[in-house]
Amino acid sequence: DTAVSQTPKYLVTQMGNDKSIKCEQNLGHDTMYWYKQDSKKFLKIMFSYNNKELIINETVPNRFSPKSPDKAHLNLHINSLELGDSAVYFCASSQSGGDEKLFFGSGTQLSVL
Amino acid sequence: AQSVTQLDSQVPVFEEAPVELRCNYSSSVSVYLFWYVQYPNQGLQLLLKYLSGSTLVKGINGFEAEFNKSQTSFHLRKPSVHISDTAEYFCAVISPRGRANNLFFGTGTRLTVIP
Image 1: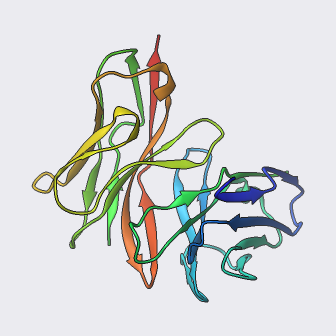
Image 2: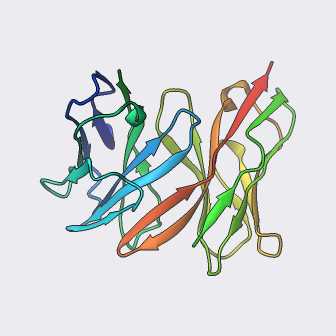
């Protein structure tokens, strides 16, 4: 049973399109995150979301928006995709007040052509 | 603000040899430090963490790390590596924001174990 699952695993699309990446966790965690990993493997946090408290990394363009229909899901919507958005996006979750361990999904490789 | 620096982007090492992956951090407050491993085409897995207490922390797969406050370091070590240890290793520090624990990662060290 996968703890943090993301779909799709691969996403290839044209510039200017709007796309979404879905993330679900079955760990009962109350906090979820989105990270972006660039071609040089550098990981940067984009968002964290806890009980309707959204914390946004100020460097993230507003074309990116997280949507959480419930505590177990945090989807990532991207509008007007640009070439520079090509990267691997990782979802993660943790339990606040716990041992600070993050559980990561296996990633979504986004390629913008 | 907290940050971590991984001094080596690539570390090649022969099988069964020891390895040390270096990590230095900067912070004006107490820190929580982590090492995560990323195998090819996979997400990150926690290797070990330092929250408080003993400065020598043991993790999975025979790895250990030592928290050194005076040198602001948290180097990762393994006495004898295996081919299966080939992966990307990330040092990370937590920056608590609200009720979330935002992990800030170093730039990663690619460990390649040579047969």
